[in-house]
Image (cartoon, rainbow over all chains, first blue to last red; front, side, top):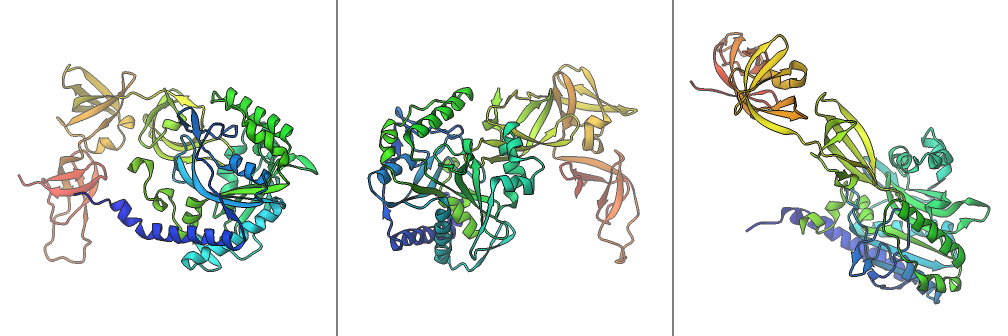
Length: 307
Length: 187
């Protein structure tokens, strides 16, 4: 007889997690979104330099439901959401699981700015699930959830928190190091923060900013230094999207990674897609924030190591 | 060869031609960015700890350390002499490489000597070692003004805190991991 202590200890966290997910669902039902389900196993993941899919019998487990959901938007499903599992190869740490839960939603019309506001609304709605107030404790920070949340461009974040400029960091291939070590720990510690306008090459499926094509209309949401969501104004030009995928595949090749064949059906239908915005939010991480938990292991029933 | 994704606590790797052990590890991946592996590494020769961040493509050799059962013989200047239990070959380890272990080695003690590329870089001690107290204040019965512990000097020269009832000449057990008094040995 062996009692599974880690599972016993997580019972309260898992009950709260269920309530949070139910409240998220209620938010989308009330705001008239359609809940959809798309296949977990797909033939072509979107080629992105640093996102690796787990192979599954000649196809792959999805790294995100993005391509299928955008095909639905292109076919006239104007407001859709999905809560599903995604898989990313070799991602494991105190904030990462190779299999994790994602909330993804898309909306025809609107851009990344209106999406930020919707994001504020969702998280403020979902916090009621476990009776949280305007101020929450996370990682020894007291984070004030009252709106509006802070918004800061990536360029500005480099100026504020590092000695190197965003352009300099990209040229010297130090962008990710600066982000992780110097910038991220400062983001969203007083209020949640949207970090926006990423370098164009860091948003393969995002629309470039019309008035400054060096950056993509993409943002990430941070609370207490933890990255929670990634959203953008969708790129809807098929020729440009094809070119961006090819660049990503070229990077993958030079890194010795699998090159993914292009998702032709998605590319063929993309020109029917209206201007839209879409976002993916990590459910496990949102639960971590609400429950003030440090390790992702403590908000799921089983980690891969426990199977 | 290891790659960055093999990194975990306790892994022994060669960095800049020297053996290191990973003492802390964190996986990071900023959105759409590359995987970063942040580590703290302790140099197994100098004992110094460094912070190092690795990327996906980085690879390194495993630090294969050999452990050999040896017996401590004697000290000469700041050189400690050990003898291989199988070959009877003698080797010398400097006081610096020995680190804290110098506080607990006494003649005839069996230890595991760690060798890196044929040279000794340290020893692994048993968790508990018996050492004799060579100097401590006598115990004054009924004196409650003194603290619960008093200093004592051991035969190796190491000074630690012991309970007041321990007398000079007694044998005590020391926990080599913490350097603290464990128990009195009945002889």
